Length: 553
Image (tube, rainbow, N blue to C red; front, top):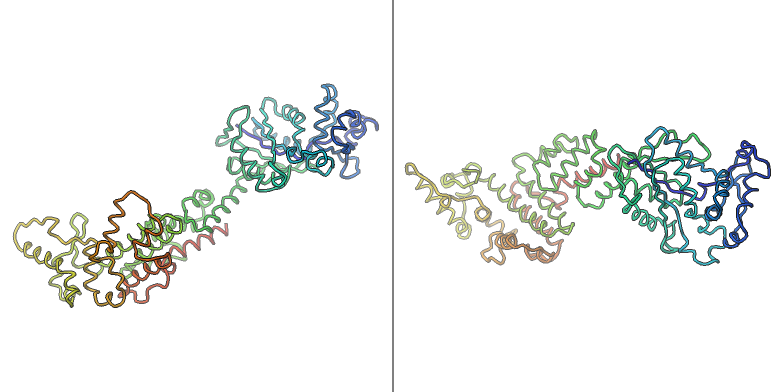
C-alpha cells in the first residue's frame, strides 16, 4: 500500500485570516477572532485554568491566520454540537497539510495514513503546571484528533487513518529529549498497524513522510525511523505555510538514506569491528560505479575469512596497492600469509572470539612451516594425490642443508626421517614397486618441525629457545598436542586458556611471542623482520584506505 506518515504541530490547524473572511463575504463581526468567542462556554473556559482564549496572530496583517492553542481549539470543537462543528469547520485552515495534499495530486494517493500527535498530560498533572500558556501541555495536538479525522477523510476518502499519540514517561524524558523520543517513535514504528492490520509497503509503493511539524526531536526521530523501516521507498513531503507552491514534488528519501547508511558504515569501520560484509550490505547499492571502494571492500571481505590469495587478487589493480601485491607474491616472500593470519587472530581476540583467535594463531604457524618446507625442499617434494611427501633424493643432494646437519641433538631430530627415507630409497631400486602411505615421509607439521629444528638447531637454541614448544617432547608443553586436544573438544575458550596454550600471561605477551616466532622463522630470508604485527599486515593499510574512501563519498 501507499502510506503517508504525518507529524502534527501546534500551528497546523488555524483560523482563517481576515482577507479570506472578506473573500467569503463576511462582515467585521464575522471575522475569526470575533466569532471564536461564541463557540465556547464559560464552564469550558474555566476547565482550561484561566488560559487566555484570545486568538493570536504572529503579525498583525490581513493575510495572517489566527492561532489557538491546539488543546483549547480541540476541546472547543469536541464540545460543540454537529451544527456548531460545521460552523467552526468553515473557519479552519490547514496551511501545511493543504500544501502536502496538493503535492500528492500527481502521485498515487495514500491508501493509509499514520498521524503522530503529542500528549504530555502525564508529565503536567497539576493545575499549577498547566496554568500557563507557555506550558508545552497546551501545545499538545492530541485534542485535534476529531478535526484531523474529518480533514483526512475529506481529502482521501476510504483511506484508514491511525492516530498515534506520543506520550512521554516523565518530565525528564519530555518530547524535547532526543533519546527518549527516538525510543518512543521507534517503538511505534515497530508495532505500526492500521485498521488492525500490519503495514505492508511493497517494492514500487511509496511511503510519504511529512516530518517537519512537532519538536525537533520528533521530526528527527520520524525521519530516521521511516528510513530505517521503509528504506528507499520513502519520499519526503516538505512544505512552507507561506509558500503554497512549495514543494513541487516529494523529495526522494534515498539521498537521506544514503547519508545515513554511509554514516553507519563509517561508524562500523571506526569501531574496528572488521565486519566488512555488514559495511557492504549497508552501502553496496551506492558503490556500483565506485570501482576503487569495491576493490577495497572485496579485498577486506576475503581477508576477513582468511582467503588471502583472493585478498591480494582483489588489490592487484588498485593504484595504491598494486606494487605491494607484486612484492608479496614473489617467491622469496613466502612468509607473508602467516603474518596476515596472525593479525587476523589479533582481530578475533579484540572481537572477543577466543576460539577463532586460537585457531588463526596456530594455523599461521602450520602455514609458515609448510611454506618454509616448500621453499627449502622444493626440489625434493613429491605430491601424489595432492599430498606433499619428502623424496629420498634429498639424501644425495650435497648442496642441501639437510646433508650438512651437525651436532648430536640436531642429527637426532631427523634420525627417524633419514631412516625412513633410506628404507624407501632401497625399496625404490626394485622393479614394480608399490609404496604404501606409511612408508613415505609426509610433510606434516611434525615432520616440518623436526626438519626446521635440525637445520636451524644452533640458532633457535641460542636466540629463540621458546620456539621449542612446537616440538617439545613433553605433551603438556607441545602446542601441537595441545592443539589436537582443544580441537577435539566441543567447548569454548577463555583468555586464560589462550594464554596457557601459548605459554604467556597477557595479551601483550601473546602478541610479542607470535611476532618473535614469525620473525625468527623467516629471518634467513627477511633478516629485519617486522617491528609490530600491525606493520606486517597489508590489511591495516587497506582498512585505513577504505575508511578514507568511504568518508569522501
